[in-house]
Length: 185
Image (cartoon, rainbow, N blue to C red; front, side, top):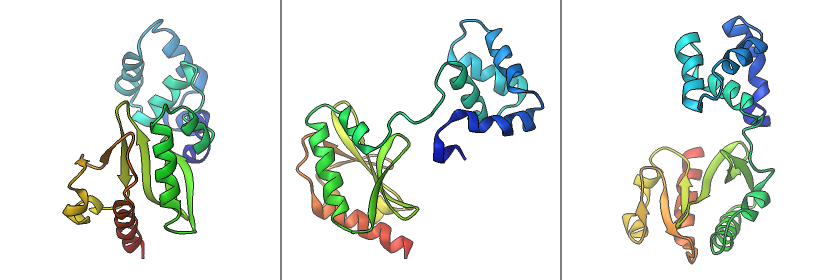
């Protein structure tokens, strides 16, 4: 449910049902910790009351003033926070990726822009301080890409690192998209 809205309060009915107390009980329990830091608050709920990580996080973050997990209203809002050349490069990558299939859409997921086909994620993008990351979705995608295509890039466990001023490599993007679409067909 929270995946759609991002509102932390959408967890509250399930939390009340599962842990047998109204939300005010949990808010008061955290208040008794005073100025405790996030790890201590999470530990109270998880270790002392058997909360799952996601339920504990929803309550703690709500109490700390973060009522939603969404930081951006859409891709434009995300892009507006990026410095140059990160912003221009990310826009170019998104544009090039969208041109590969007219049915692709850009959505926000995990507070990052993701290209999706229907409900299936194809590829995502993220900006770090000194580089950009490309996240291909699907099992074994990175292992399936022709190694020659990947040679110029740093390959992490699940991402491809490119320079923040990267000249978009359409061959790489096409390979990632093709492999993912093959998995989905």
